[in-house]
Image 1: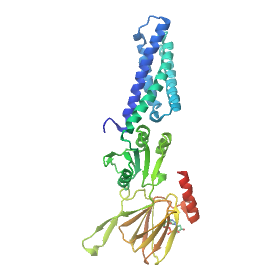
Image 2: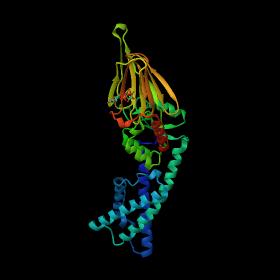
Image 3: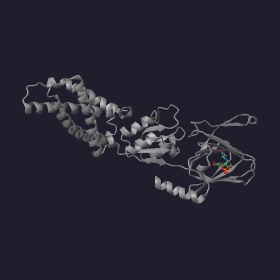
Image 4: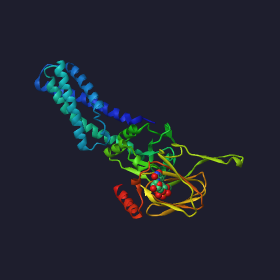
Amino acid sequence: MGLELRYGKLKYISFIVLDLICLYLANMAAFGIYVEQTHVPYDPSDHLPVLIIMIVIDVAVTLVFNTLQRVLRRRIRIELFDTMTHIMISFLLLCVILFTTKQGADYSRGVVLLAYGIDYILLVTVHIFWRSFLQELGKKSGRPNALLISNDGFVEEGLQDLAKTGIDVKKILLLLNLHRNEISGIPVVADIEEAAASVCWEELDRVYVYGIDRHTVPEALRKACAEMRIKIDLVDFKYRILDVKTVQNKDAKYGSLTFLEERRDIPFNIRRVYWITETEANLQRGFHAHKRNCQLLFCPHGAIDIIMDDGEEKTVVTLDEPGKGLMLMPEVWHEMVWKESGSVLCVLASEYYDEEEYIRNYDDFVAYQHKREEDL
Ligand code: T46
């Protein structure tokens, strides 16, 4: 774990400490300049009560207004603006406090004004240098650092895939989390807020979505990524064959039992279940794609071919045993062909039935695919 704390808080704290040092130095400099210019016989300790109030205000403004929120990825313009906002709020609060409590000596106003001016220049400079230093430190491994968004069913596969492409997954967000704290030594963030905070503070270079529908990426995370200018990459797959757990009794007369568990085996929330029965051999159904619906198809009895087409290539998977499941992602054109009469198709779906969400014309499907690619 090294020096890194949850939320990258150490970096946050380091900026607060630097801000306080700047404030102190700015006050000392302002006091020195003021005394030298005006030749007033004041001692620096006379300024101490005001300085303490300034420090308290500084910390409060940082925490309450979250003025350091984007400090790790600020560009110069944002740096100038955010730091100015911080200084202005602090200055106004200080004026109110000094006015109401009658704190400070006659010269305080001049020193305070000068101190905030010097503080502004110091803060901007220190932030820029400290940020570059931290970014250099973060780049040490030379490999991109990523947040992986996935779910229990697909996370391990996602880690392996990303490792092959030379990406260091630093944190994992599980959308359907069964209270796992780490996977293969990589910490699992507790919730979406923590993931968003990680994006803001951990200098992550990439966010990968693996094995879940792109529409389920939480809004808070989208916003954090947009703010930090991090692109959300979708490690897309069109389908997966799942080995559904089957309990085979030693005595064949008891048959076999196959079971699926939400969250453990199925990487989406099940909103709907349907099944197709009383079928003839060679029956053809389907001929559509879904915009959002993720589905798990299985055939507990008989054999059914599922023909999938992503607009570029066709793949056929035969469901011919109860323990074979087909996880079918949205935006895949699919057709089903019954190989035996009486075969049963069971489907678990992530969405409620909504005809608007179907694409039932192949040309529309191809056009939709092209549009999606352009949008990404
Ligand atoms: C899919 C494949 C594998 C409903 O009213 N509610 C439902 O939940 C469903 C699934 C269908 N319907 C109605 C809509 C149609 O009027 O049932 C009728 C037959 O549906 P469809 O022609 O879409 O059936 P299939 O076998 O072509 O497709 C079905 C699913 O609809 C589809 O989502 O992926 O099975």
